[in-house]
Image 1 (cartoon, rainbow, N blue to C red):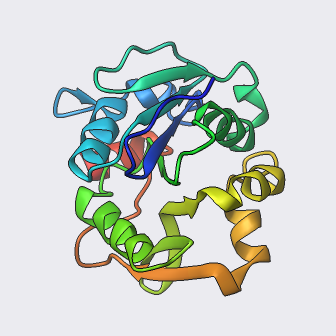
Image 2: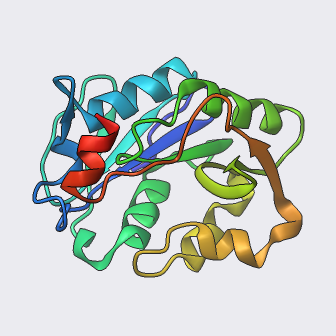
Length: 192
């Protein structure tokens, strides 16, 4: 497909899941009247990522300010969405920030920290919370193919990251974001 970029890191917002335990596709969940998919795109725009690619699956959504691609294999898990999103980027895209739609407390400030690490030379940067690696993740272009190849089932870039700890720059984000995700109605109530 080759979506064009403007020199800044692109962003992938993975939003294909059906939200089986939640009872609704996560992209369509609303907090304060705003869908999670729209919150995620807005956050990535505020962080200066361009283009922003939303990978959908269980629910068809239109999202202002993003390129939406449908992953026909969404039922196989996050790995297929990661591969679909990476393959949509232009060959000369310098880097990509990968974020998950079900983490509404991830902020533009956290993504800007990943971008700063990249601009300082990091080729892979991972947000950490309490010292634990979570999302979002930034991966430089030269690692796209290996990250895609290492993805399997519901495991996105984690396989690649674990196989190459020497590449990973940990970026503490505890003070500006949280990696809490929404999987159940109780999670939604707690994070709303």
